[in-house]
Image (cartoon, rainbow, N blue to C red; front, side):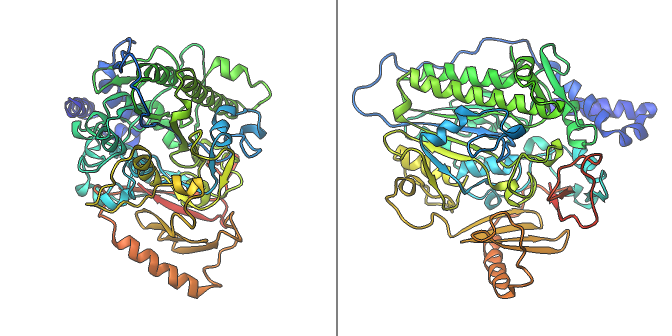
Length: 555
């Protein structure tokens, strides 16, 4: 059905072209996407009640396996929460509920994302493997968007579009995680867990790639990489649009406001998306209070488009900048709904027997134009500098994990799979490489040493290795190496690539060895876009300078 809708959308575009609009559409990709989206969204129905499958009426006697709740934010910056004395707008938006997960458990202070953009990071979380091991290297993206990105000038630098790769491309609906991968959901289903997925999937749209075929008994959310929080211009909603940013223009044109239950017909949520997902998660906890469950709650907040409820916006009059205030209000809503889930666990008597994990898929994005969201780190989403991959990462499990502990060794999103397996008593797969490890013994203090000697990231020709305290980034565009000793220089200011050639050569060899183990991308990166490391996008406020450090991000 999805592919048929794409065919109808393509036919509509052809009719416009036949009517003499070909030049207009080529020069206006946002308009083209708006036409396609308007056709795709015709099947979205009105709000409807959601009914969750009910577990047993009474809890089984004796000890039962612990529940696992994984809460994932989308593009949450390291400095978006107030845990470490920071926060949005100088701490104007307290995040007590998110902070409480760290305060009541373990703050993995050197926690790393699976990737610097959404979908590959989520694939790493779900499988415990570098997503590049199975070819999920780039975020699924519409070719209209790719062409727009590749032909846009960002400040003083132009994107790159690889038209010669078009022949290798596949339909966006087919870009996803192969069904042959073993997800956390599949792993826990075999252990008798009831598995539920909420919010943003972004791991494929084909039937075999959707949540219900990838290990989830129930799902409520959306397959796409983004979603509106409310209809554009809806009453009771404040919003901010970035006129300088092609990504933002594309999202406002393309995204619907809809969810689907268990892959069924799409419908409009009855309220602001973040609140809706949080409230439905509470109802699902109630329904499953008497059986072990795994909940994957993937909020799309605070990813663009920037939309907030009037109530949250009005609660922040001290923030004078409208864009920052809308963003801050979105953080407020995210924290409120994390609190709802935590309170529901307590109300149902499940708190002590539930492992709660909180993290973000990657760092805060440069394209919202806000300068301090990843402070104190350099870089953004779509870079492998710390600002792009060093994320909030907390776990709490009362009575098992220590309380209020900061664990300093580097850990990663790939560790969630093995950690969930350990908690549930599930056997680890032996027919494939699993890059993650069970973090519970390390957090308990029962196992010493580093969970990882090396961690690896790749997006096209841009590759990064963390080896002990050393971090190497290798870029093709520009042709440059960055070598940092994070023990001495955690903020990546002193590049040692020229001054320590022996260490550079050593790490280049390690990186090449791991890189050779990875799979060829399942679809090509049609475009690359420049990202300045030390300032956000917004040419009026933060213009590019000739001496800026930057990378080209492939997607």
